[in-house]
Image (cartoon, rainbow, N blue to C red; front, side):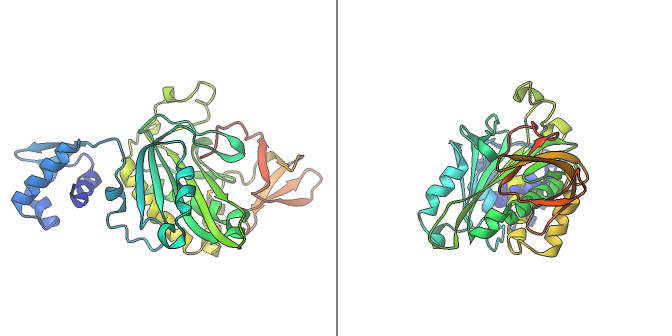
Length: 331
């Protein structure tokens, strides 16, 4: 399969393109284009050929393809290696298995699954998604563990994922601290960073991301329906292959500088928890107040009811109300 051709058709979505124009764009002879179109058709791509308007992609196979996702990304760090599987317990488990190959062989590896049977989330929650409905992936990186534990990577990944969605749709995506992607307070996706203790300060870290794409409301349990959303529910049937590609590109950009002032400010502008009264719990102790700010380490700064300010780190803190109960976090 020619990924340049399939991606060219995907990017045009429902728009038609004359065969001669497409052949010129891809530097293919007409006969070669015709052959490559036959190959795509055999792989499950449905392509309309109109005598006047030209070629138009009607549908593509539901499974993600590693060659399509990786083609021409130009990644410096994230995504030079891409792997796609039909079903996995969790892509993060597959990433941890790959970590055994060592940094030279596995740094930057991205793994996507069409379906997960045991996707996990923050504090033991589960991620629920029918096959082919979400972008479900994990990225393996060798990083300073302090950055992963302190929230830098969670913040960067949340910004990258929000921007990737906005690159392909007209929606506005916010961040519900620390790791949920939200649209109008309804959960669109989530982030989970895992770092395992080791003998060195730098080691493998797995970044898991899930984004709801094609689900209809009926795909979610009734108790979650008021609190979750997918892009399709908003009228945007995004191409999951293009979103996976854009996600890796955005992640590659933010991983170049996890603590830059610009990135910290991008996260602050998207944070939907700022200015709200919430209840948080840290190591068994609860506190109530108004969220005043995010600190540079991605900790929550709460103005307590007695007027004092207190910082709550992302690693050991979770929101228990009134914003709790908005669905599981990825992954």
